[in-house]
Length: 87
Image (cartoon, rainbow, N blue to C red; front, top):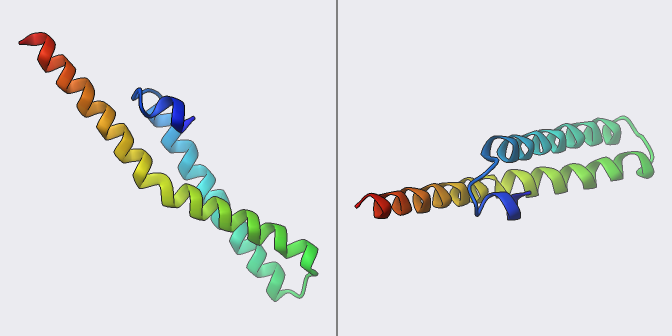
């Protein structure tokens, strides 16, 4: 979604919102993994939660500022084009 929508400046709300939601899901998965690990659950219970939570949290949370900057660049291009059209 980001690769298609952000350069064109469309779908800012759904794209950024879903990215934050997925980062939150990753944090919840990490918390569940830690609880399972401390509770003595076997490897096959806590490891998928830890892996998925780490990937979602790190990727979606870490790339959020990059995607926001991409949308700001698209807005700036749109404003520059409008200024050129007007005068």
